Length: 324
Image 1: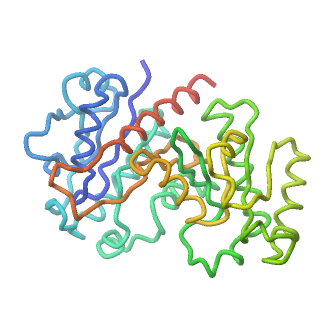
Image 2: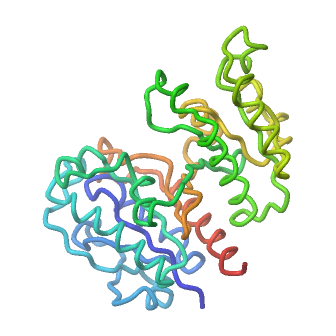
């Protein structure tokens, strides 16, 4: 019997606790997972049952959401984050990673965190989940993918100002993103011969240098070198023509040059159902593609679709790694 997925609690004042329960209600034994967090932070009357180990979770999940208790210092009031809980949130993530590396869980799915709360309460030193997970994995070179049924897209640069993108976009960095994406499409998504489309940085992919030269001086030569390694690449392509339905038929994943170039198309195609996947880790990690949503926390209206999809994707990826 395969180990369950570890679902970390995330920010307890956000929608994480309620969408965890909703995800269990939708999945039950179909995708076994164990929630890690403080039981007092769950909605009142939640159908949850404590377990002593992840191994017990699979036998419980048909009737209740299994929980591995992790005591927090503060209380959880929906919409009102307490910095006293920051260290608990961080420690839960580290606990899940330790369990994944020990083989106790098959994958990790993380509920949303709030960086400001973590900085205020525990001097959190990382830009977000992805960078912290990379550090816990020993400094792995990681890539963020956003995925839904209609599109898989990877931003080559992530949470930086637009003015910083041209300086941050280096040949070595872009090569690492493309190679990592190619490897993950094969190993984690079962695509034997991946086709990757690569966007240009500038409008019209520079239009022969009239609107910028990065495509000519760096991106196109790099793509030629990577093609020589056997990677099937399209591009550099104008970003404004590569995300419509017919264009998407030509590739399995797209690499974009910056955050909004990647996230606008996927959130337009599937705002509620997209999944954040961290590629390049020695364990599987997925997450819903949304934040803590303090404004609706505790009202029972949070949409669990993205978390459900994240758990299902983690289960699929975990199976492929186990069978490899």
